[in-house]
Amino acid sequence: MDLNDYGKAFSSDTYATKLEVQEVLQIRAGIDVFWGKIMSYRDQFMSKLPLRNIERLPFNIVFTPGILNKETLLERKLVKLMIKYLKLNYNDYVRVSARNEQIIISLRHIANIYNVETDDNLFIDIINGNASSLKPNQIILQKYYECLKNIEDYSADAVNEARALKFASILSGIDDVDFLYRKEELQDTTIRLYDRLYSAAPVERIKPMMEDLYEFIGNSSYSALFRSIVTYFYICMIQPFSFYSEEIAVLLSKAILAQYDFDEIATLIDFETLIDDLKEKMTKVFKNVMESNDMTYIIHHSMIILDEKVTNILDLIKKNAANEIKEEFFNIEKSEEKLEKNVEVVEKSSQVLHNVDYEVRVALPKLPVGLDEKDADKIAEHLLELNPKLKKGEALFYAHHCTVGKYYTIQQFKAMNECAYETARTSMDNLSRLGFYQKEMIKNKFVYTPVERK
Image (spheres, rainbow, N blue to C red):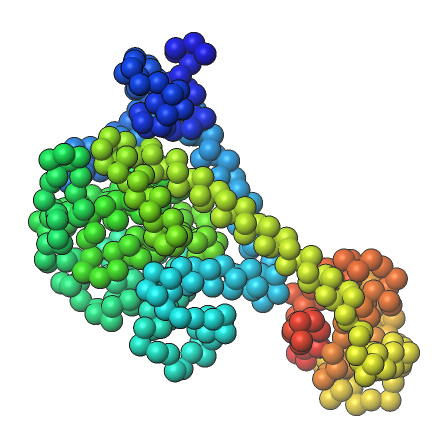
């Protein structure tokens, strides 16, 4: 490898420290020559961030082609996740199960940090709002979930001091801006002469540094992804809050992604791993940043971790979708009692509208002029004329299956229209979206019950 190529190799393909370069090249003497070439390469792509360290020196960021490419690929993956997630109905099994599984992962990280004994039932109770008798050390999980819900429900809210106060007040129970930032020095905050590292910012530096951060978040031209990662590092570095600095750092990082384009999926990504099982690894990366004032180290490592997390969520959605189809397709008619009921419905489908009190028993408010209860085909035609978003098979199925109080299935639509299962599933969901049916889950199976139409 030509000496000039080392800069690219150790700054784009990866982003190595001087020690890591030395270990890879397995050299002791002469490392400064190689490192000098690497730094010369990085200088071409270096920019100064509008954020300063505790000694008031500006942080740098190095946008090598490799770093920018990693950012682009990760943002594309985030967009893909957002599109897949938001295309699902709010109450869709795939969406709900993926969301809850990811929330549980985040809550489990918090439980690990505080050594809280938990099980999946506890997490589910917290998510469903049924956790009425929590132990004192479990309350942090309920409060943290409330913060995640705040990000979901108010994704467009700005990330500023008021948002930080909101999270701090939820977690600590103290809703007072005067108690937001700590007023006492943490241990060992004086400068260490050997490695020039701080363990936290001095009290007098907290307010101005946080104001710089809020300005950076709100007015920077950097991507939401970069701002999110920088915010996580910056808050963890200065430890500004009276309580829960690292948790608030993670929450604000998620809130930045939510505010800038990524909405609800921000809460799905378990940033919490950075302050739990990966904390030791991230501490080493922090040291690299603080020794060099180069923020690229934390950005590079965090993007690798987040890329894996986003990939896992995409795989989870795909797996849940496959499981849903498999569950409905193979288990929909296992119960003998349900078999008999559904056979009866199919056999009598052409007579559903016959000899009934139409105003009471079926979902339609009244019959079209000139039709009687037995004219299901003509009713279907009438529905198509009223609602162009309906397809013929959907209108026909509904005309035969609109008895209030009954529950219909995808399998019935498939049998009646002689179509593929996925086509039947899409059609029933469309009828639900248009307000003809209410979609419900009963024992891990979706069923559809007619909604009375006005």
